[in-house]
Length: 475
Ligand SMILES: *Cc1c(COP(=O)(O)O)cnc(C)c1O
Image 1: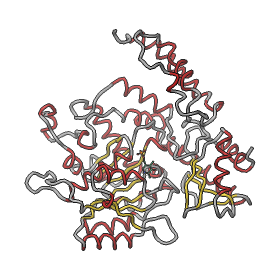
Image 2: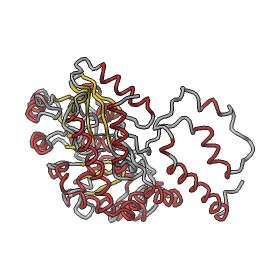
Image 3: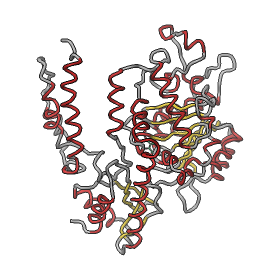
Image 4: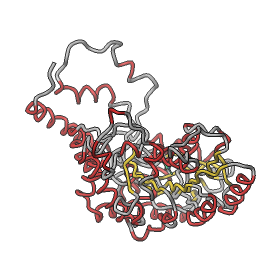
């Protein structure tokens, strides 16, 4: 059965694009999250795949029939849960071109365009964010687009493990992990670091949870320094410290400069995880999010959270372009390549876990092209302003209180005087049952908290008013 002809694709493509546009245009008529029983969607499928082909023209409406009542609508302007992952229509256009190219950008030569557009846009973004020039490909380091911040953390850890114990002869890490490697995080660090430690085979004791400074949710650099010194005295090897800027739970930030200072004497890799908050550095008034990064080894921020770029697009920069290939490059004969051997090119397969990679840079480029930095700053500032306005209303309200100071576009609140948390938990359930908004919860010092994260591309002041009405007058 041959594929569609380009002309057939053109005709069908219009139908599919119409379906996308209709879905976005009508999204507010739907609940943010459908109430659905587990197994509902699967039960609508036959056990066996169809033998006979069916017309693709009917496919969008089939998808709607099968899945349309079983969605959580991340692109709904009332989506304030977790961190919104905005998949702008601007980025979908670039993603379509990427799908069309269908390249595997594992080596420079398997798609020079894929490699070099990625280098160019990560260099541009490094400069736009105010990262040190050392983090650009021009400056001896460089950026890459990973599938997720979780993968970026695993790549950073793999490079750190290698740097901590290279074999003097081969340059390759001679032994596997010894059980003496240690990775330092705080209780607020994203779980992806614990997962990376597990995947890297360091064992549960490989993860050291450093206390936060008293009364804060930020890693105490003195406690970090002490822990590292104790570990070294005990014959252990401090391999990596993860500093977070904008934690997932409450938006708290670790003191990156002090953490770099504590890690430096031990030669530990410092990875800065700013998966959500990092993109805010596009705005001069939020540049604090990259404070101290000039001393770090790697920095990660997700374009697929708050930078309008459809998942997956996690931006990952390193200071030393050689560090990742040193740890990850393996060249069987079927991947031998003259351009690679020349040393004049970057092979991004050596910057990630998997071999194959999509042309992700196209959707990011389409966002940069279609929005410009001006558009992106307006997008970020709009959400920060909504968070500030919500925080103001909470401060002025008798029944609600801020659980901590808002950070950028994230507001954490609870019911005033709700010591055991039952009223706050009930509030979250009532609000989410309304259907027009979706929030998520967390805890601060063991007390339940409601998180409101602004970040969907369509969210405006009117949506804040709806949210406020639901929060203060639950049906
Ligand atoms: C969301 C988040 C992550 C995980 O991001 P993925 O791209 O889904 O792996 C890691 N760290 C922080 C601080 C996050 O907010």
